[in-house]
Length: 330
Image (cartoon, rainbow, N blue to C red; front, side, top):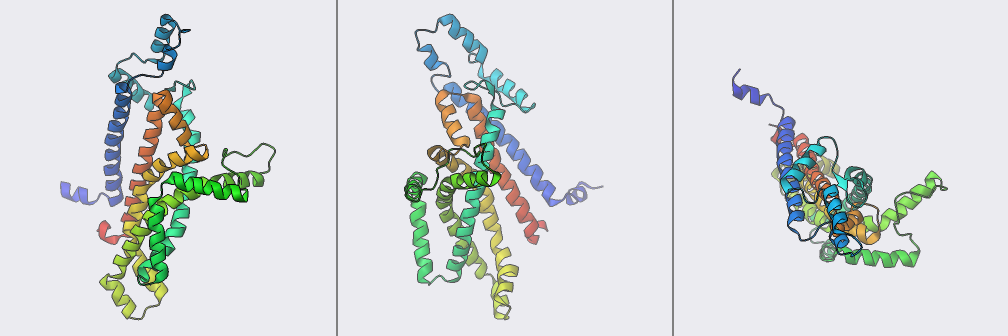
């Protein structure tokens, strides 16, 4: 059978998955090696503070360096890390004396929960306002919404968090001290503790991302309104709901889905600062501690998780667009 006929039989989603997987493998490989190399080039290591103590003998220090493999050449350490990765291991945490994978996974779950909640809040706020502003560009309310979104976009997440702290203290809202409820609480009380602890970091993160969503969604909806088939449908007297969901929404969905998929990694990166400030038990506080202590395997693992989230979001967006847009499938 000719090669051209064989390639035509390959489903579009298979091509997308293979292409994205190859890109992800190359990108993650380069990113992980660069992370190891940066720790190699930065002065000092995990034992720098220990070496400064006069109570630690040179023999003890040499034994510790050999135990942690700090004097092993970069290439050998990276190859050993890759070999361990095939077994589901990210390498030992030098501070906690356990595998970094087991240390990061519970924190990753808390970070994912925070990001998904913030994403949902940002969409619930931004999408209706963007649609209204696109359909009513001359409205005074739309103008105020646009200026408010620009002002929110200019504010750093740290300022938003501090403002939310002040509001939370004024109304007695609990601050996040951990995702788990006390053992003597019922499941309902535990859920309440989780939601109240999640509120401040999620709102702060959503307030920082909603303006970007609002701008892109308003532009996408405005472009969809100008499409000839949308104009024809409206002139034909079709009900507004039919025009909105059958014509407008599919036309505006592609850029919105691409934005959501591509912004997943960006939200994850932004949430690290919010987590650290608010005390949410995600990757942020652990990563900051690992950077200062030069706990290389924890840092590399957290970077890999963040990059993987970005690539998974891009892949999911491509598959959704492929499913929604018949022009791409053809």
